[in-house]
Length: 418
Image (cartoon, rainbow, N blue to C red; front, side, top):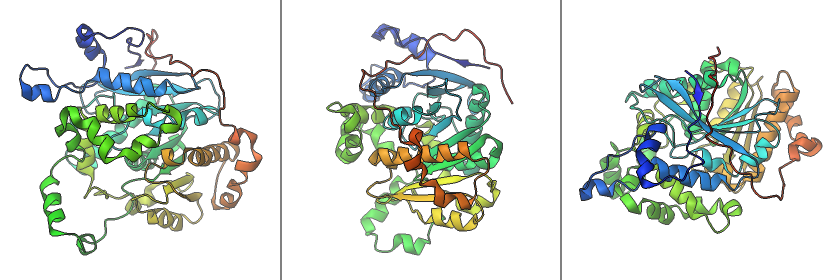
């Protein structure tokens, strides 16, 4: 197996190129039909998703490249992980980014330039999401989690990354923690951004208190469905639905995309209008939308105490940040830095991107400069934001945004590493 790059970036994709592109890409497409029923579901494609992603990432000032990494039969018969990278030439410890439910690599657009100003950055579409393969996951919670973690490890093996900083948002944070428990020798610092699935679910009495009967009825009916089913049912109106129900998400990216923020809702729509593969895995792992069947706090004892952890919460998020303090209390001799960013919601990486980037760079710099972090380093970590010039160096290049060096032919196979 080897990492390979699909060769479609430089060509203009016309309608008659669809089959060729579909063979190159890992996405499962809905079969086209002349009937109105299937026509309703033909408002999404890997081509549309790719175009929206490329438009968002074209705003970056740092050159990037994108390619598919072949991880073999992890869940499906030939799974592939869509990957983008920046500043691979840097000798510093790389950082790997794992997105949350319903997202993809492009939603890191407010963070990529800042992080890549100091070190290599790799962002992936998790298996079952974005432009990666969409296999059929197990419907059993532990097995679905294991399949996703195994796909991340196979990706790492193909990429030959020996050690890295691992950052995960929401569901990506859940998977990042699970991965670190199983592969502690690979993770230099674990950064969790408003992570999902950490605390235990409160009692049914507490959950149902003061909930109207009609809300309970709706919740009962939609419980068997995947979380983002409404986007697919809306068909061609899925993008409109996202814009109307969550205008706040689109506005988060206005500083970068200016008057073209509509591409964000288009990107989110295309990420979630296709086969809900990874979404089904999330559905298997969740217990109610807000909790995991196997919460992380109940197994924190399995996480190597020598691995430093930084938790970044949004003060206005729906995620319960009490788990952060619980983790801190359970790892008294370990480095556990919990920060609550004022004014940020669940999408803390986008709501307050400058502050978020500062904390992430601080964690990376501290890990690079200190062989073994402990709780004694927490009170000194904030000084890095003031004293370390590299930490505060956010790329302010005023030149035109760099164009992607993406999807060119990769001639040499990459040998598999341990």
